[in-house]
Length: 182
Image (cartoon, rainbow, N blue to C red):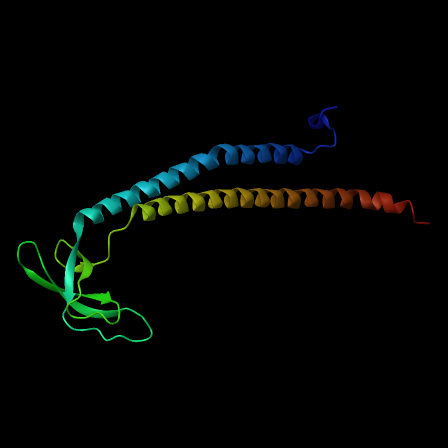
């Protein structure tokens, strides 16, 4: 006799069986699609940002305006630096340099189109990492959501089953326990 033909199988058992199959199909088919699309979307957005930053920023050689004292801690210190743009315009800005840097040492800094000191542009590694991270978070979220949906459905079905059992016991118990009264 097949499992589905079991006469003791309740409608809630059949629903649970079909719902579990649906969730498994959702995971098997939907998880790769959602993960891939989220990862590639995040990667494409990050690549666009990387390309925009590379186009808007360039590296220049600057010189500190003063000597930076050396200390034992080794933490970089802020100092004003001066550089000359290709058009002959002299500019200044603030950046972090190693302790012990003298006034004559060359320091490489990144500047934007308006001549302000800025961070270096993001790298391709940042874009790939962003894509992988987004894909992993979507995969984790999909698995977690599917699991919570399954647990919530089981909770509701079990509550309904227990309520049915209580109702059946309320009907059967007086008849059953009356046999033992004397």
